[in-house]
Image (cartoon, rainbow over all chains, first blue to last red; front, side, top):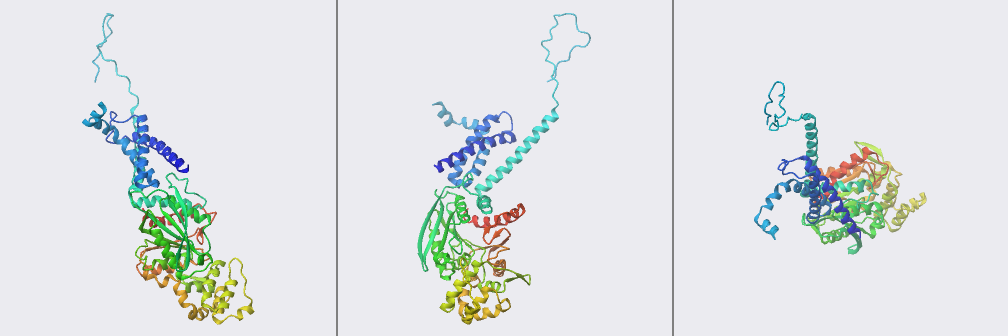
Length: 103
Length: 423
């Protein structure tokens, strides 16, 4: 039971922290998504950040151990929120992705 | 884009004049300077904060030193505030407590193991191990020690506490180093622990046993580090300070009064070197929990070496300390040398971290200074830290913010050295 509670607590911390970090990345207006056309909206940045932190945190727990998973969540979240607006359209243009989405 | 120029002069009276092709007049611009500076300040602040957060996150997850620093920072609160559990920290590992008894040359060795329940992560691939020798008496139930062991385990290391029947009875015997060797070997082969990532931490009387074990050829090349907290370096020098109730600092004698426990331990240590009845009388006379002080008539009945031992422990002949030690040496010299890290220092290969409190009333801080000086002469890797917040090895209460900050920084440095091995 305590393991389940700690899992839920960690996930919640990463979701909330990731959302805030996503907003921070959006506010920082860093290259390559500096132009308004490729930058996420605030709401999208928060949701992408939350999801990226959750996935990054659990990947970090698997790779580095749970004590360092939060640190992994931070930099995975920041990278995803910053690069996704630029990489996302390019990925969607790939042939196999188009074939996949056309099914 | 500029607007086409309007025709000048009075407007035409012809109402059919159509101005729709003209561009609408430009709206007056809002003052741009204030909005741009607010946006710039906010953007820069976000960038600075983000850069800091990223730097800390990358360092503390990708680099071994960063992971060690993060662990050390997380362990400072449970150490400095012993009632602070580690379990509330996000990301703390779930741990399991196991009790075992193994055998050694001197009898049973009682082990308490605190270990994470999950397998070690791929980075770094194996966990570090710390073997705690908590010193004299049965310390297995002391809350500060349990909290420390649990906190270290929740940070991802495996902790093994060990004790023996002799240590529980406030006795220190050199042969108990085999018990330490057996416990070390057990920890080095514990599931998930890297065999080359195990260090020994000796508190008080456990420190010399840590040194003796680290010099043992069976594990000498494996021991990653030794940490000695509140321990002595040379028993003869320690007896000298006890006998004169003073220690030598900067060439001057400074009054120093030991507590009852080290006197009990030394009486138990010296007893085997004395005639049987002398040993029994001495042990009873200096028992820390129920002393039965010797009367002058009883002292007079002791052998010369028995009397020398008595006066050293009683501290009632400070001017006669050298003579009393000289009387004792033919009977107890080998025994005292066997229990002194000073006699086996060259055999130790592992780095040694020496921690001591300046106001320690069980073992004087000058022992730690002597130890560090000897290691410096030998060019042996070591570090030496003096604290001011411990009562021997337990944190005092009522500390000021300045004391915590100062001592916390020194403790953090040692924690980094210890935890880097397992990170």
